[in-house]
Image 1 (spheres, rainbow, N blue to C red):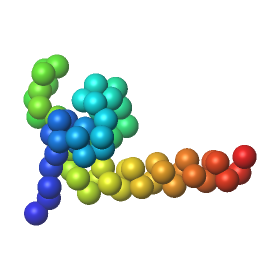
Image 2: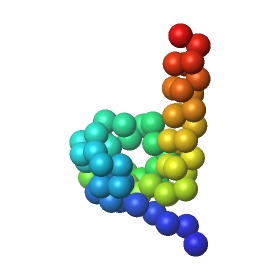
Image 3: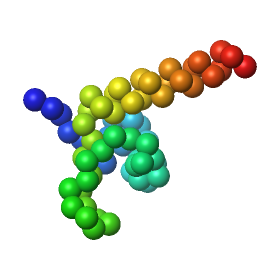
Length: 66
């Protein structure tokens, strides 16, 4: 069974503010439930973990080449 996180839960687990999650919303894989500005947004835990792992690997590779 897939585990989904709300913005609040994701922010808490990453130790960042909810506004940081809002600013980075287009970078994180997410599901928006509805078409309004205030629609609920959910993040699948495994997808976020995979995204963060790949983003970290890309950044680390850039640092090594400098």
